[in-house]
Structure formats: C-alpha cells, structure tokens
Length: 332
Image (cartoon, rainbow, N blue to C red; front, side, top):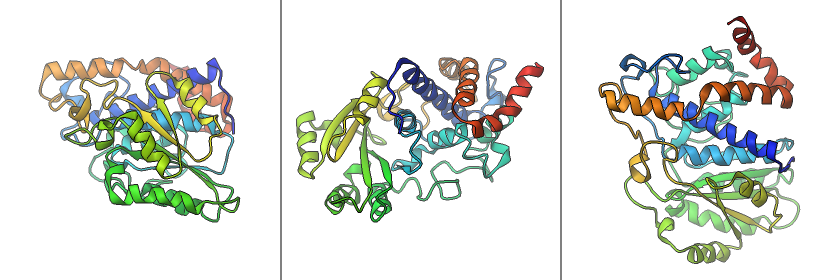
C-alpha cells in the first residue's frame, strides 16, 4: 500500500473528491451540456429527477482516501453499504476506468461523461441504486444492513484480503448491521483477512436525525469499544490529511467514524438533501441558476484537465483509456 502523506497526495485526493461530486450532480440532473460549455437551459435538465445526493459526498470522501492509501494493494476491496448513493460509486468506477473495461461507451472522454450522466436513472440505462448489473457490484442498494456481514464473509479464509466497508449511520440502526459487529470475534489469528468498518456519520436519515448522531461522542465510542473495536474519528470535510493519518495508525481492530455534513457542497443540508435537493430546475429559473452555480463551484474544466495528468503519471492502463480525450482536446 502507499500511505504516502504529502502535499501532492492530499491535493490529488481533494481534486478527486471534487471531480466525483461534480459527476454525481451531473448524473442526477443533466441530460445534456454535461461540461457546462454554455449556460444551462431547461432543456438540459432531465424530465424526471430520481436519486440520492445526501450521502454521496461522504462516499466520495471515503473512496478517494481509501483508493489513495491502498493504491498498491491488489487484495484491497471496498464494500458500499448505502447503495442508494450509487451515482457516487459509479463516478469513481468511471474515472478509474473500471466501467470502460466492460462497456466502451463509458470511456473517459466527453462522450463517456455524457453516456454515464444521461443514462443514470434513465429508461434502459443505469438504476438509481447500486445493482449487480454494474461491474464490481455484488449487492443491491436500498436494502441497508448486510454490507458488514458481506465484508466479513469475504475475508473469512482469505488472509490476503483487506476490506473496507462503508456503513450508513441509518444503516447501523438495523438489527443485521449492529449484530454483524459481533463477527469481529471470528477474525482471530492470521488465517483470515482484515475488515475496516467505516461508519458514515452524516447525521440524518430520509426525514430525521439518525440515532447515532444524537449520541454523545463518548457514548458512541463506548458502544464501539464494547464490540472489541478501537474507535477512530475522522472529520472528513475538515482535513483530508486526518483521514490518511487515521488509516496509518495501525490500531488493533480499528472502527472509523467518518463525520461529514449531509448534502455538503449542495444548496441544502440535513434531511432536505437526502434525495434531490432542487425539485424544479426544469421549470424554475431561480433553481436552474442555483444548479448551475453549484456545478460551477467544482471547477469542472480545471478538474478534468488535472485528473488526466494524474492518471497519466499513475496508471498506464488508464492512460490508454484517456487517449480519446487527449486527441479531442488537442484538436480544439
């Protein structure tokens, strides 16, 4: 694994998060003008808006940091509990070139961006929740609770495996998820792999605060310690370096608590950001402009240029997938 913690690495992680956040919003709202080459119009907005924004930023924070830290570990895997945040997972699989291995239309160029964004939550396109029809996805989204059990099942008998599993704070309220914490006791000795649970504590479910958001930090930590874990709190929106440091601690049976604000970066927060935070951008000029400003806040042109350069330095396979993009940029 890499674990390198320097200014360049931190910058790349933050840029990846911004890029994936942008792709999430584009998937949720846009059917055209995906890189904002002109002002948004009502015709650019999908006729039916369906999906979940609130959990996506936290997914991108976790995925980007894990991807960077375990970049050299071919036995690392990631299990997503809140599968209703599928556009975040799809954004990450897209920029890593995983989707294009199975579908050439998902190439990392303007056509590929248009393909994944327009076809998200679209007839005969991609579902709004994680689904096994997506490469590398083995569980469904929306049925929260069994992600942690799946992670433990994967590493039992596979000592080479390290599996990080992101658990929604609403998800941990289910009997299946909370009881799965007992599975830690099964991973004794060197014959099994390692599970890294990450509780995504963004505070809210669909319409109310989560139970664990209402607990004090001490109470939550003591609950986690009671299952034999070492709680490690990460305030993901404050400092990316903190996440990398947390992964480097080497604590025995770590249990990470990732705190982000629900709907971070968008126009609404808390439960109002759970699904689609702007309801009428296809008919309301004010909401359309809010959406445009939201997308522009990520600096998409700068991000796409930089992510290409990063991929060229890091991964020759990914570079091959980017050649179409480079040629188009050169011809302009």
